[in-house]
Image (cartoon, rainbow, N blue to C red):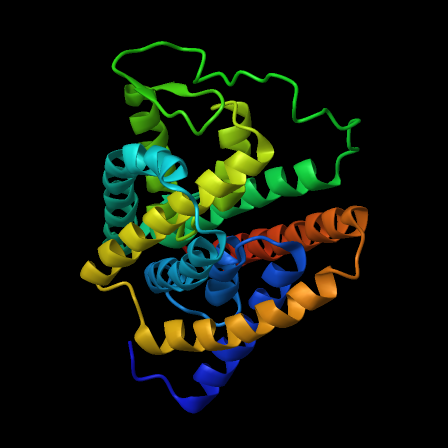
Length: 298
């Protein structure tokens, strides 16, 4: 899959630049946009789209870690999650490779590619949920100084981990392992770093302050991106020429988007991001419809 022609590389570079620009503009990772676009627009096979996107996200994640320079205390939580993340990534990556081998499944008396149906359905549900959260009316802001106790941090299932740099400082190691397993499986299966889900999970499940949640999430995103890259490379789901095209042009696009983002208000960014995700969900749903329409009847 590394013998792409020039036209394909140019199109992939344009996609990477566009997604990078949107990532820089709205301040989010572009993994959740890349997989559907690569598959629906460029026709990249789903396992390759997922694996190459996972490899691509390692670049921005590394830059984010080096820029933020989190202290050792903020790295303890990601390291506790590492084991669960690794198992989850293996499960997710193995699942998508297995679905790729099972040529087709029968849906509504039609033979549909199992891997395309599973991944695109997950992305459609995820995008619709994110769009709803982004476009719904915003409640009055609550001071970040108010004591907040997350659902998972309130459960004392031993053994417990004590991390003085965080508030709250005590967490159940088994519950963190299961959280890591869930995030890793999602990343391995969909090719995204999980940042969009990790930030609200750190705030509402672990009870972290917004700033601390963002710092901890950066470390987790790097870990899961690194593990996903290794796993998908081992399974043969990474296309090097595609990853290079995405990284080079994505970095340039992200720089341009960051500059444009500083000129927009928070409300404009939030609404624009919600509309972007909603349109992307429409593209994914249209692709699902085309899969069913073009599929052979049983």
